[in-house]
Picture 1 (spheres, rainbow over the protein chains, first blue to last red):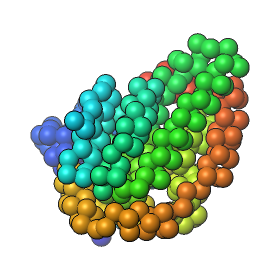
Picture 2: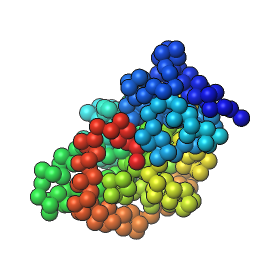
Picture 3: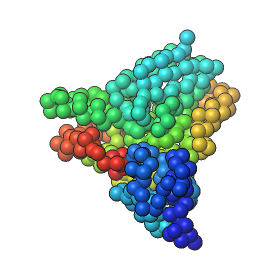
Picture 4: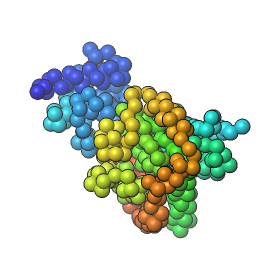
Length: 80
Length: 267
């Protein structure tokens, strides 16, 4: 079982790779919309990437209003 | 020459396969231009349908197959008209979309939707009119219409009901959530999964297999296994138009169009 810290790091790493942003420039508390400069459709790309990676389904309504990596990781953790 | 290049799509026929490429920025929103060019395609393909084994519909837009109806156009068109004309205009648009989807659904050749990225609302309804959906593993599917106080209006519910278990249909419709390609394949919405960026390639390989079969047998088999739910489709038009006439829908469209929310696409 992953810890929340591990999940958070994987979320950050996946976002970094998907949007081609240096992982070192992203922190768990960052607002990923602002930090990555992404819009709603790109957020859905990230959601697909995360679901495929973690082998889970994360309904959109569970992540509505979520904008930082740590909270996103918490939502994922509850589905692992 | 069997080809066309318009403002929202282009198509080209080659060796029994016609490929329709949706290509309207930002995400193939279905408005009057895209719908009009789809209507032209459906009319044109009739003249060479006997020589056509497969039609592949796909998108050249990076963001996906289609994000659905052009809500901005719909809203701006609606507020510019008095109520009676507004409702008549929406009915005309919806009826046209049904004619197009029904023609694609009933085509004597095999239709394949090669999907990547978002396939939402009207985009999903277009894909559902096709015989086979091949999806990139990053594709996502949703019917977010309920957040606007509407139901899908281009034939989505009857076609989804035809193909899938009602429990999933209710989940998709009543929550408005989007599902990934793996889930869509598990429930039977997606026939084949493709790697990232490979849906069109897989669709072409599938088309190459389909073209080997006898055209009459193929058409008869399709008609037998894929009945078109005309009565429910007509019912859907009435329900959609009835819902659209409510002030709450215009208010919801206004909210969507004017939204500065980071995730307006999410229900």
